[in-house]
Amino acid sequence: MHDGIAIREFGNEDEFLSACSPECLKNARLQEWLEAPFDWHTHWLRFKKVLQFVAAGWIGLFVYATLILIFGWGFSGRAAGCALAITVLPIVCRTSDVVLRLTPGGLTEASYALGSGQWRTVLFVTLPTARSGLATAVILGTARAIGETSPVLLTAGATGDLNLNPLHGPMMSLPLLAYLSVLQPQQTVVTRGFGAASALLILVVLLFIIARIIGGRGAGQLTARQQRRRAYGSARDLARYTRQHGPAGYPKEE
Figure (spheres, rainbow, N blue to C red):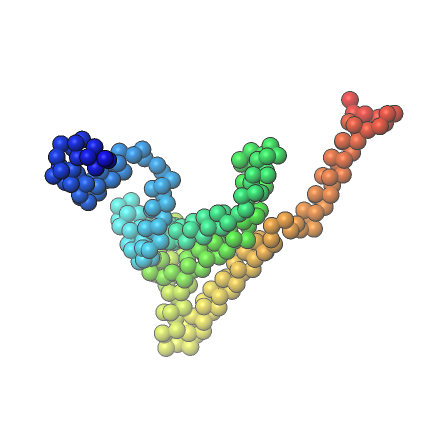
């Protein structure tokens, strides 16, 4: 019955089969996608997925072609920072998104039920719960940024002089400095290269320790200072409640 209605609607059987062909269905789906309203969130998710599989060298070439050649920044530390920021962006966003999705929905629902707004719920419920996972995302992104050499070489260049200005002039990265120093025949330069590698290792260890201090505690575990603040706030609320709703003869708050 339905087939007869569909064929009668299209006129004949040939037109019905041609309308149901895969090409027509693809064109209809494409037209529906083009006519759909522009959603920044959906396109941002697609952009992150695509950017996750782009090699770091291509990102360095993109920053070199745009910021250095077109905008005239020149080889500098800020150009290298932009390249590393684009490189780190997909892995940090992806990991943070997974961590935030694993946050129990009952906690946010309980916060909303108690009258808290969205921003207060995110600040005092969601972020403290996902703090360890967010710290892990920062560690992964920092590890990838420190280990990248090609985008830094394409955007910051290389120099034998000490340059402390990240806005102007080429700068030398620690991995490149360590590699070039150990290839030199002078023992002093080789020692300098091992010193650069040791400084890079110490920097990674310090960042790891800081991240563990920030996100090492689980959800609901308070520091000693936070426990004292919580006890002081509870005592203050108890005294205020007692003054307002105390027994007869108790001095009440005006």
